[in-house]
Length: 510
Image (cartoon, rainbow, N blue to C red; front, side):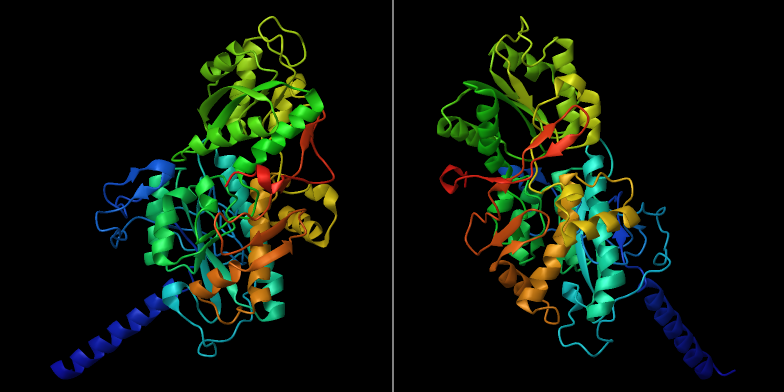
């Protein structure tokens, strides 16, 4: 063989290998990275409101090639953030990822949507996650530690929608499949920012559908024009961004409603708050909102204490509020810190309405997030007491076409998740909301980030079928709803009220 021929054959072989490698990589639909040795931003610090600062130039470099990553199973459906691992997810839920470096095919029985074949669409833009046969969305979640129950629930809820969408809805309607990229940010705002930069600059997602720390990425999303649609709204900053479209009543606007319930049912004259706060969130807005509620309803707020949402000790905070002898105590929402406060109540032998020497005025308490474990562990202390409420109706009772399908899909694709958990509910229903957003705006085959932001900025009122209505405009603060449901412990379960109650706009915190 002559050197010339040998050279030609070598080039052909090299080209063939490259083509095979591209073909192999193209089947990987979802990437998940839990451990990376390279950060996407340098000198990250958490500032006020949980916004993490990037490099001095305002942009951070993506992780270097070769960073360790993991691949998860191909997500066979559309849907998602977050806290805070959501996708239309998470912010949504899924099967556990295989070990690092493992490639897996789509689950048996899944189908790809019959979207236009390659070369037959006019809006393909791989730099923005738009392909002729699929689009790519992203989110972060928390899959370890005390808050994992919420991250996993949201992730599985979102992926239940995705699986249903990709298997049944997309093929019937000739729509593109949706593929989800998600990262476990460990509820760390700096990691949320780093992974968001990676999803935008390396994974090239079309949009985000949920993250654990929206405040940490607000400025970055605005600088890049990347929408986040489906956020549950646990950060006050979620309502202050042109790029973030939350789905639920702002937490600060639940405070006056919760105080209203307490005043109506227990005729209280004073209250104290033990407020749980996620990492990187500035809670000054929370304290201000509780103070405004106290003024509006003419009830005296005698104490406000802060506790980490994942905190497992509440002794200091609980003793502080006890010393002020309130009529009512608002306990944390997150299960870990809520149950920590319940343990403190038991250790101090405090029971609402029992005329205890250490809490003679205490008429009631409220807290928890509608998880059965809260009822089981709280026992008689919580019977007749309220949780933090829910933006959604009880899907087991509402009996709409949407909730019926939700229960079927959760049973099939996310068994083991409590279907009344509002994080799981949110990130499943966020996929449904996004589907309707695209359809109503007529942009299913003309997808760009700009088109999505424009459509979302003029969306609603939209009755989701989950007991809530969403309205988004281009005005800030963006307030999707001012309504929620009372949820009360009957001694065995959390029981949802049949009708939602809404806050007067004049009493809202903006």
